[in-house]
Length: 447
Ligand code: SF4
Image: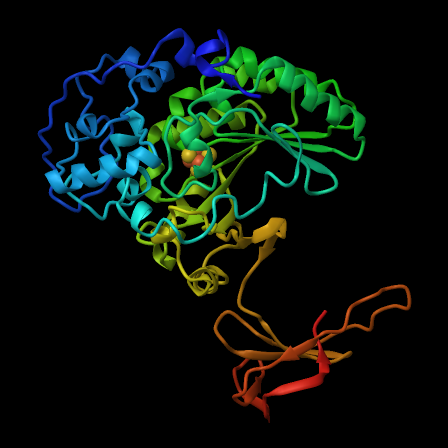
């Protein structure tokens, strides 16, 4: 059983300060359509700086209705009706901060696509499944997922400041805001205490930073007392959608219980604002490494250029591009999904064309709990025991002498299906050394 937010007194800021209405706004937008560069406090210039810097103000003033949204973004009556229809199934929630990143006159704005409901969430809503990763199946106690031997996932709440239209856990939105009760947390901790193979605990949600710092500390401090828990990871989108949350109180608390790692979720370079940069810098200075897990989204970041800019900007703010996820086949997200080939092509366009530090791993999270699998172009064209034929990032082909495996090393022989066109073996000056016919060759192996 979960605890309704309204019954908790210390878990979330919404308990202390119930959501209110956004203040009246100046809707004059001086930027030309299509200019989607971060506009700082667009729409909210009249808000006192102290409020703008206060994450609880943003949390309280989330935009949750079509009528509120229409104060900032021009919407036709047809669009309003569509959004109203969608929000009956999949609610709307945008922080004032994140809203201010949207270019209001550009329907293709990459921030808008992530935040504003689309009628396609409903019209294509039968495609996919509610819980493709089958997280429920691997729940060992309510809120605790134990799929991989050495790590567990603690789902503490379903509350997020922003409801991302591509969310994998969209199925939870209709349940209203809940937070795991202290008794439920204790059951989870008890499971972790009894399983000494668990060395890595991932705290997730919803967004766990929607909890008050005090409640979060209660959990993190007790986890830290479990000797076999080596690292604690927090999955949060706050640095992207409400970076003011990363304040001194939170960073001071996290610095007490390291090693704590934080995974966040930037999807587009327009999300990397001075506020976001400051949030990540605060975390790093508190000893919390920050990695990024982006999701490949149609019309948002599905080009080599968009990904390259994102990854370069991430490195500039000292955040490591870690994963690029194929968007999960979740109901209500099909309109944002891309063919897997798009991700593989993007990886090909990054690898070798920019520094390796700027290249995330493209992964697909397999349905039915199959786990994450990295995907990329196959650079090994063929392989024998003594030699590999390898293509580089330019498409040039090289021989590579392969040292023999020692008697103690084991490897699996699998069949490589090589391209049907002939393979030219080149030297480093790009001169052909030999010409081979390609095709299916069962004598060649790939490790
Ligand atoms: S922050 Fe994460 S969990 Fe929350 S709505 Fe966005 S994608 Fe879903």
